[in-house]
Length: 108
Image (cartoon, rainbow, N blue to C red):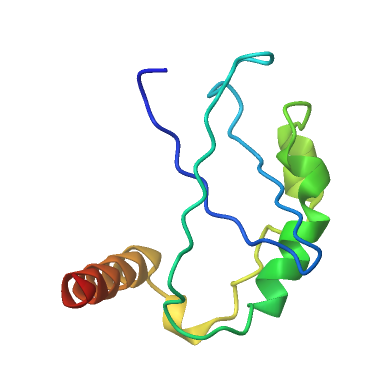
């Protein structure tokens, strides 16, 4: 495989780890190598319950058989619509990346 695909996921309390890969990235039956690297929490050890609930509900939509209609009918559309800190998504994402890079440079 010439390109590496990085997927971040949370291990459940029972030790389960579920990986959903983007369609077209991996051919069914293809051998892959999974390397587990713990990620230092960026803000808190408490999970984002709203996001976790969304991800659990989206498991059916993360498969190769999903259609755009499935995704549009899901709760994912508009989940952050009323957040005051995300009025400008490009600026918000740029700031998140800047903060992440700053943390990474401090941690070595």
